[in-house]
Structures are given as C-alpha cells and as structure tokens.
Length: 296
Image (cartoon, rainbow, N blue to C red; front, top):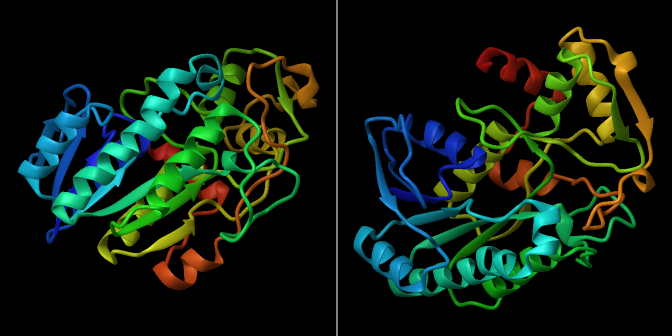
C-alpha cells in the first residue's frame, strides 16, 4: 500500500512518518511546503502545497497513492480569526483540491478535523453530535468536512482534540511543553479551569490515522484520549509528573484572556466507535507524559 502524507512538517505529520516508515508493507511518501530533514531512508518526499490546485493535481496524479492522510491545516485559532483568507485557503480550498485529485486517482482520503467544530455547550461528544462552531477556525474545518461529505470519493474524517507531543525540531509548542518550560523557568502561569477536553497524544492520533488508512475506513471517527480534563488539570498533572513547582500554577477562568477567537467551553470525545471498529486504544495521559519524557 502506498500512503501519502500531507503536512508532514507538523507534529502529526512527523509522528505519521515515523510510524509508517516501520511498516514493511507500506510505501510512505511525505509531502510539505518545504523539505524535511532527517527523513527515514525508506520514505520518499515531494514538495506539495495543497492550496495550489494545479500542483496538487500533478503530484497526486504522478505518485498515485492508495491513501492520502491530510494532516496539513492552519490550526492557530486566533490567527485563523484575524487572517480569514489564509485560514479558508488552508482548511477549505486545500481539501477541495485534494478531493479533486482523489476523484481522478481513486485514492482514499483520511482527513483530520477538530472538536472546535462544536459550540462547547456540552460534552464529551460522539460522532452524531451536531456541529455549531463558535470561531472561524471551527467554521473552516466544518466547511472542509462538508466538502468531503458531499463528494463522491472514498473518505474518512478523524476528529481530534488538543494534541500534544514532541518532535526533534518543535516549531510550535503545545500545552504540556509550555507548562513544563514555564515551571522550569520559575514563571507563574494562569491556566483556565472552565474548559474541558480529552487531550490527545500525537502518537495515538498517528495510530488512529494508520488504522483508518490501512482499513480504508469510511465515515467519521473520534480519535482522542479518553480522560476529560481542564487545562488546569493538565498543568497540575504535568507538574506532578515532572516534579515541578505546581504552586506556580494559578487557576483562572477563560474571561481573564481576551483572545480574538472564542473557545468552546466543553468538548472532549467519546471514542467507542474508533475502539470497536478500528481497534484504537489510546494511552492514558500519564502514559503519554512518560512517552514524551523518553523523547526529550
């Protein structure tokens, strides 16, 4: 099976490359807007900007993958709110271009979506929950989902929540790394305790993608951790795990932060469908922290 990964420069893309490169029956092609250093020897690379329709059509037609895993996206929630054109181009136009390419090559498309398509009025949520985004990032990701659902191609949508993990060259931080670094530097941090999520280890999300890709699963699947936690809970557990000073962590509510984009209050996912149909089994949060430690 030949699997092409878009957005291979990112956290999920990196974990997918590492996972797929160890599978003897899979030929892996990593793609991104720039060259990726230290690719495994058995992984190919092709430059690809999915917002470029012609380039996307040419590259997909030449490589003819059996499955495409689309991990390319604009995920900076506040930046999406203030630069809506760039957000739409990355999260909607990009998926439309992939759909057009898949229609010609008959590739199966596994697309990554988000809990931010929901309004946060309740949670955790199953795959039948009704989307109602409260920010532009969520609107763009929902529009990408709908483009896929209305297409004639073979597809799966994997929705995820608050992904954390480590890569050798972290161009962007995540909540665990931010808490760890802040406390190591002796900084007081204010962390919200009125939002709820099911944080997702990047390796688990990559495994969910692998399972969906190799099974050519169809439909919507929730892929996340199982533990419903507030960011404050995450910060306290991170401090305890790394034996850092948790008195530096101050609980606050989301009204303290004046951010361009509204965040949904309560999301998190019920993952029973993925466990039953895909065989997905996530790590616990503490297991995730232990795996990160081995990589730092």
